Amino acid sequence: MASLSQRYIEVCVFKFEASSPKYLILHRSTKESVYPGVWQYITGSIEEKETAVEAALRELGEETGLAPKSMWIVPYVNSFYDQRRDTISINPVFAVEVAAGSEPVISDEHQEFVWLDFEESIRRLVWPGQHAALRIVHEFIIKGKDAMHHSRIL
Image 1 (cartoon, rainbow, N blue to C red):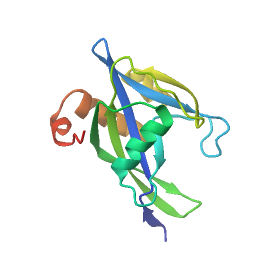
Image 2: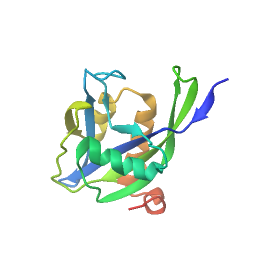
Image 3: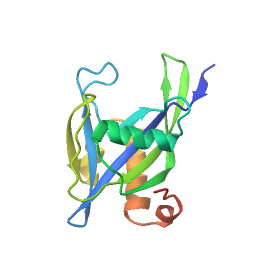
């Protein structure tokens, strides 16, 4: 029987340009062994004795070099089945706002990046769980619903 695992985090990064939100979408390197060439937002592993929040901030720095202006817990958990480990992975999702004008310095894990509006971001992302998470970020954090005020951690 598959076991549950919480080994990964996901981070949706955005900034406001001319009062409009732009989402950072990263193009995974075609040299990566897992999901080469896929467009995604930040994903990463939680290291031993590290909290999910600490992992999200570390991965933000490692994959983009960006500094958070604000950070939220997204009221959504993404999940997927990992056949190699026979586990169901439960991934907390975070949203991070960076300053207008910020530009990432991407790691070797990715080959390019784009800042896109909501609709174009949805078109680029491959996984339905990432679509769902981005919709929640857009509706409840960007548009300032109650979740924005209750889930802010930075």
